[in-house]
Length: 135
Image (tube, rainbow, N blue to C red; front, side):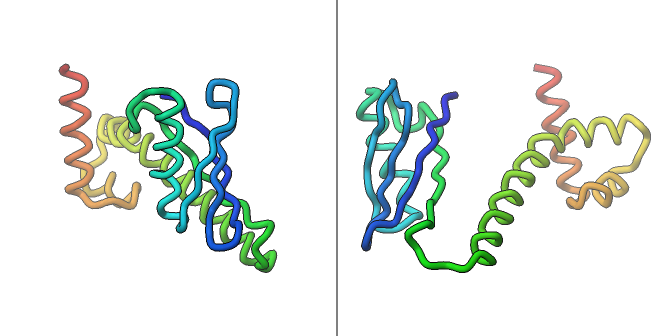
């Protein structure tokens, strides 16, 4: 699935949203709040592409150069974004880790302890792995 990179820049009371390289051009929209940015830019991109809103992904990155915040705050924001990306990578790779650790003879509780999840989550992942492999 295609992911469009979107820059969100604060301009007065609005976020200006610009998606680059949508069929070789920029697509723009705006939203009052940052939590509305995804839906606003999706609508604009979907209109340009003549597709459904869920036919692509968007990655909205706020630019805070026009907002007066300290370097420490900017560092916190960068760290939180990194944390979210690492968490997503760990989530995607967890099923394979569960399968490998269980195949190595570890108990469900041991695997849960190692991965920082509940034993019931390990069992759910195992069940999903089993269903995916038997399909």
